[in-house]
Image (cartoon, rainbow, N blue to C red; front, side, top):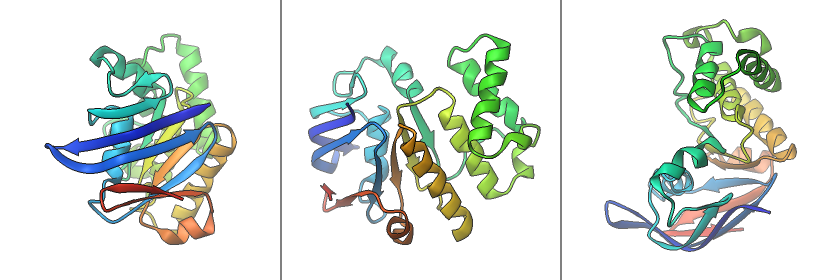
Length: 220
C-alpha cells in the first residue's frame, strides 16, 4: 500500500510555483531521503504532506486523505497519523519530558491515564530514553532532545514520519545515531521521509533518494 501517492502535483507558496509535475509514491516501511539546496522546495513538499500548504492541482493522497480536496475538519486526523520531527525540536520548555509527551496524547484524544503512561514509557524505551522522563528539555543534550522528539512523533503509531533536517543541529556522531534510529523505525513498518543536506549520511545509510532541483522533484 502507498502511504504517499502524488501524481502531477503543483506546489505554490504565495502564488509562486515551488515545485511542479511532482510524481511520488512511497510505500509502508520505505525510507527515502529528500535532498536539494536551500530554497529548492524540500520543506514545502513536506508541509504539503500534512496540509500546512494547500495543493491546487494534480492528485495527492497521504494514507486515505485526498490532499487536494481535504476538508479543514479532517486535517487534525491527518496530522495525528503522521509523526513530524523538526530540526529545532519544538519541545515545551516549561515542562518535563513526560509532560511534553502527555500533552500530545491529551491533545489527540487519549483519556485513560494508565494507557497514556504505558504509551509514553513504550516510546521512550523505543528511542533509548526510558530513564529521562523526569528531565526538563534544557537538562538534555541536543541528541537526547531529538530522541524525545522522535518518541513524540511515534506516540500515535503513525504510518508516516516526516523528518525535516533532524540532524542539522547535532554533531556528526549524534546525527549518525538519529539516522540509525529512523532507519530502524522504517524497518518496523513506518514510512520515513528525511530531508537533509548531509550527503555523507545518505552514503553511509543508503536508501531511496529524491532531489528537489529546478522546481522539480527527481526521484532516483
